[in-house]
Amino acid sequence: MTTSKVDLSGSNQRESWMALLGLAAQEVFSLMLACELQPSPAPIPSEGLDVTAMVGLAGSLCGLVTVRCAAKSAAVMASHMLGIDADAAGAEALDAVGEVCNMIAGNFKNKITGMGDRCKLSVPTVITGEDYSLHSMGEDTKIDVSMLLEGSPLLISLEVSG
Amino acid sequence: MDNIRVLIIDDSSVMRKIVERSLRQADIKLGDVVEASNGMEALAALNEKKVDLILCDINMPVMDGLEFVKSLPSIANAKGVPVVMITTEGSEGHVVQALSAGARGYIRKPFTPDQVKEHILPLLAGTTV
Image (cartoon, rainbow over all chains, first blue to last red; front, side, top):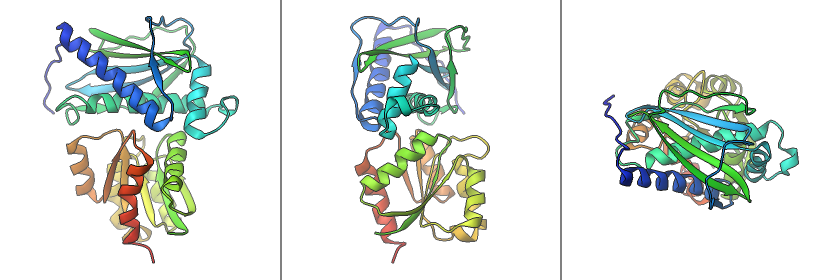
């Protein structure tokens, strides 16, 4: 596999990828959950977001895509995906947020010309709880996209080395 | 099209249900719906049951979708059954790999019910009475 460094040092590139990550997320929610994800008017802090889904990126783009939300929002995702009450979601809430993260990561990389074949995705992993530290090999550059799902915060992040 | 027996392979139980719902929304009348969470489970299921259609993710633990498709020629119950990949891996290279391995179609996640209909109905028309 050919590898090349990803340069996000330019502000245009960074802005462009932030927009693509947001768009990738909005498309996933619109097409697969039949609901709209709204941009947050202010950056969302990670405090209180006790569900973290992550998908690893390897190849030309090396790092991690994460989706962080409250357990209640994870249940809302499962509710939209399965057509059930959020209260009935149970363990499927974690499966739902993992799959959402997977689709956002895939949709994002497919939007970058030439990246589709040069970047592989891992299967998703989901962590619950807030008391942890995440150390990614790809934390040279981090892009955060703050969104709202039915008024509740959703933090989508891309961490890449380069 | 009635009583279409389908095998849905995805490591996410939520996604398996979404795929099933999308088939129903595409006006495909389903018979038995068999689920598997990876290629190995799917091969075991195919040794027990016949199906009319297989929908398969690519990135899965234990046995991924491409390995599963490559294994199908050795399974009698899979002879002539169309396989459609449904995956986040949507690059041209992945499509070529999947089609070369024996898949008959490719749907990229996220998808709409219309896309499911467009890809699957022609395949079922060729395999059902």
